[in-house]
Amino acid sequence: MNYIDRIISNCKEAKKAKPIREFVLNQNDLSELYGIKKAIYIIEQISGDPEKTFNKLEEYKATKERACPALNQPSNIMYVGSSTTGIKNRIKQHIGSEAKQTYSLHLSKWFDGDYKITIKEYDCSREIIQLIEDDLSDRLKPAFGKQGGNNK
Picture 1 (spheres, one colour):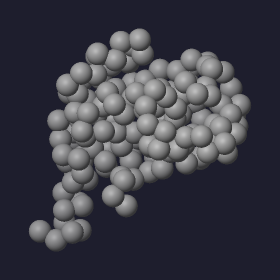
Picture 2 (picture 1 turned 135 degrees about the horizontal axis):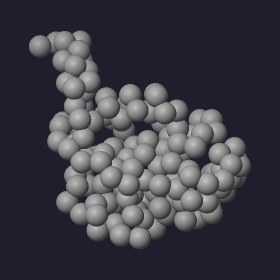
Picture 3 (picture 1 turned 90 degrees about the vertical axis):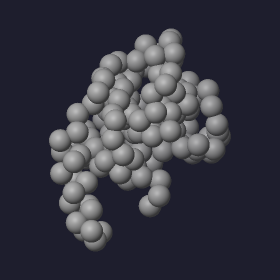
Picture 4 (picture 1 turned 45 degrees about the horizontal axis):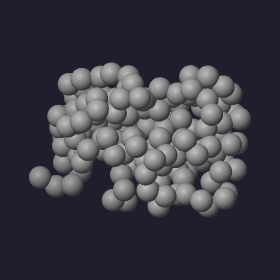
């Protein structure tokens, strides 16, 4: 099977894929994430002004204190991402309690509004999860983050 045929096949599989579980994370109890390897997450601002939030991250990013994601445009959808190696650590990075050099929101360092994190757990390959994440990102137009995997 050549490259284009693989892409077409993966796209067909991604269109059919459904999460095996979906829930809103209780941010005070990350134990809900224990054992979840493959998932897509959506971080959504639920109070405050998305334009002010956009400007606040832009200012925080300029300090170069931590690695912050790409700036797109103001939106109540702050970020769409995925992990295929364990979602718990990735969410901890976004909350702001982990690695300074990892591109993430680091919310505890600059954001003072309310947000929710929706977790969609999948049982499919990394390539399929990446396609689903890219589709969600394209449709939801998050304020922050790049589209595509880290292998690009």
